Image (cartoon, rainbow, N blue to C red; front, side, top):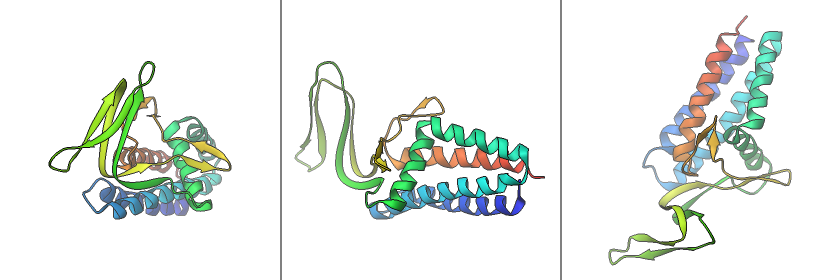
Length: 191
């Protein structure tokens, strides 16, 4: 593993850490959306730098190939890869801020899902025949990423564990943890 390439990957990772602090905060919606797009981009750069750094040794190259395979098969890692491509090469953003949104899963033969507003002006769910209903207020939500004509929906799992919310607030810490572990593994391969 090339040490210079590893150092560059570490620099990109530090940008991810800065972005996740904003994403999970109560910062304004637009600032959190921008931080998510920054994290998506930086995560892609961590991969690129590690790929180049791994070319220095056969052991590191073999390790990186395993990481690329994991990216192809893990829904979150696959989404992140294609969200970066969509953000970089299309006009469709892989995330968007919303004032109010609802999410639920159809259970059975269908149902009703809507938003009502109470006397205090706060939204509430109107939900029949739906499972796992959620309401989001002033939140950034993941959009489907369209890369080379293929649609990649927001991930439902990562490394075999369920992801409950399609929000950067939940997903970003998972991505940062994965990148941190990846960098630790890469450091053990320095020649």
